[in-house]
Image 1 (cartoon, each protein chain N blue to C red):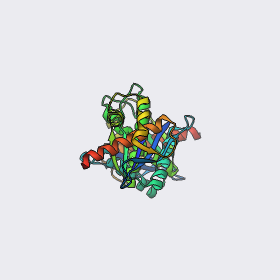
Image 2 (tube, one colour):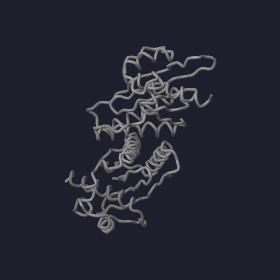
Image 3 (cartoon, rainbow over the protein chains, first blue to last red):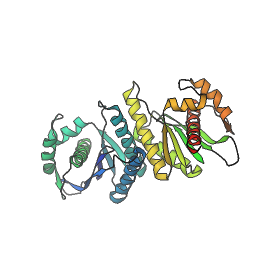
Image 4 (cartoon, chains in turn purple, yellow):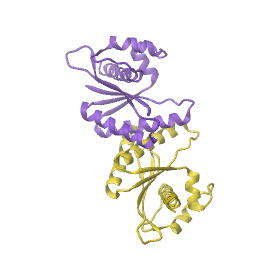
Length: 162
Length: 162
C-alpha cells in the first residue's frame, strides 16, 4: 500500500509518500518535500502550480490513498478560505487519479504519532524516525506534518483491518 | 473573445459560456447549465465531479477567460470552506488549461447588470435578456448568476480597452 500524505497550504505544502512493503514491519518514507509557491504570484497561478505538482507526484508514485489534514477554521478568514481552495485542488486531483481520500483532524494525527492529541511539534519530530524508516533527510516542519498524516492513515487502516 | 463564467458552489454550480463575435454589438450566450452534485455522495467525489465537468466544458468551448464570483464569508463556516474547495478546483483547472482568471465580487457583478450593487435576483433576471442574446432558455437561478458574472467580465474588459 502506498499513501500520499499532505499537509495542505497554498504557500507551503507538505507532501510525503509512505509505503508499506509486504514482509516488513515498518513503513518507509519514499518521498517528501515542502512545495512552495511565491507570495508575489497571483493566487490562481499558485493554485494551478499546486495542481500541476500534485499531478506530477501522482504520476511518479501512483499512490493508492490520499491522507490529508482537515481544515479547522482559524482567526484569519482570508487565509482559511485560501487553504480551503488549495485543499479542494488536491482532493479533486487525487480522487480523479483514482486515490481513495481520507481526512484526519490535527488531533487524530497527533494522537497517532505521540499518543497525545495536544502534543507539540517537537514531540512529533522526535517520534517520526521511531515509527517509520526514513531513507532521506527530512528538515522542514511541513514535511514532518505530511509524514505524520501518512502515519495516521496507515495506523487507522491497521485498526480497521485487524 | 469567449468567457467561461461560473457561480461557484459544490451542490449547484452555475456554468455559462459567453461569446463576443466581431461585428456584433451584443454578446451571446453559447452555453449554460446548473451542474449538480449529490448530497449523498462523499465530498471528495463531488469535488472530483466538478473538476471533470469543468475539464469537459473547457475542452468543448475553449474559453479565453474565466470569470468567477469571489467568496464572501457567511455565517455557515463549513459551507464557506466547502465552496472555497470547489472554487479552488475550478480556478486551478481553468488556469492550467490556459485561461486568464478574473474574480468579481457579488456587488461588482450586480452593478454591471443593473447599475445597482444591492439589487435583487429578480432585477438581474429581468435585465439579462436585454444585455445579451440568449439563444437557449435559461431557467435556473444559478445559471443566471453565472451569466451575470460573464456580463460583468465583458463590460470590465470594455472599460479597460477603451
